[in-house]
Image (tube, rainbow, N blue to C red; front, side, top):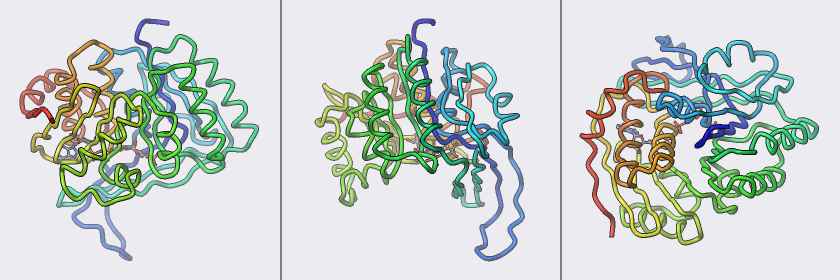
Amino acid sequence: MKKNHILTFTLNPAYDLMGSCKKIEYGEVNRIQTHGLYAAGKGINVAKVLRDLGMPVTVSGFLGEENKEGFSSKILGMSAQFHTVPGRTRINMKLTDAENISTDFNFSGFEINSKNWEDFYSHSMNILNNVNLVVVSGSLPIGIDIHDFSLWIKAVKEKCPRLVFDSSGEALKIGLKVLPWLVKPNLSELKIWAGVDLSHFSDVVAAAKKLHQEGIEHVIVSLGDQGAIWIYKDGGYFASAPACKVVSTVGAGDSMVAGLIYGLLTGKTYAHSLRLATAISCITVSQSGVGIDDIDKLDAMMARVNLQPLS
Ligand SMILES: Nc1ncnc2c1ncn2[C@@H]1O[C@H](COP(=O)(O)OP(=O)(O)O)[C@@H](O)[C@H]1O
Ligand SMILES: O=P(O)(O)OC[C@H]1O[C@](O)(COP(=O)(O)O)[C@@H](O)[C@@H]1O
């Protein structure tokens, strides 16, 4: 396997059906303009960006048997090592309205039984050999016991200490306990972890520092259109996100994670890496779907990111 080989696990991938309408009318028939149907889920999105930046990447997780045709053809250029299970991969609906607000309807899909989990567990440990960095991202499908997930992610970290973790809800709380190498909660996820309302910027910085002090080397908190902060051993940065036309914010966080990984694995400075990650996430916001189709756009977007050191 090549140097810097990256593996992403998406236990609950999805087809993202993206579209827009003027306004979502509750209880009415809503007519939606379709933008596209994409193979997605957090680790898949991270992998798309890394692939476009030229990094070798493998994607893994579960995939539903019934609608698996087509998924692989939508993620060309990366190695796919999915564990197929009976049932359907979920379809998540993502709508952007005239005020540029994205609303997500994340459905449930296949269910995992204990045999599926046991098989996946051993398969996942095998494919972790020779991996330089592993990403565990997204929600858990129905049927995965949180205690089993906790044991699995611990074992993943033992095999590959450079663990990047991005999830929500109970899985987020459990995953943070294994002290991943890098985490990127958004503001609402950080609030859940902190258990308090983080109403001021200084509260957000303090909570991120606390998470870092627990033993997580890189804590990045994304703040939507406000940008992001990064706390690491010797300091931190705030990056403001450049104003951009919003097509859909879906995948913005995943794109940021990919940019951070790329910067860190290719030896860029933290300032450069955060600038790059912020720029990539803004490019994602200004298009439908995740990925960098024009690499020349990046430099221009990076120049528009404003960085400030945090004390
Ligand atoms: N409306 C926006 N305009 C510009 N950049 C944005 C916007 N929304 C998100 N971003 C960029 O994407 C990053 C991740 O977005 P955020 O919504 O915080 O994450 P998540 O998708 O994980 O909830 C932000 O830090 C920012 O750089
Ligand atoms: O696994 P979850 O938490 O339901 O999230 C899955 C959804 O998140 C996405 O990966 C987008 O995530 P972000 O907007 O946080 O980057 C979608 O592609 C997918 O539908």
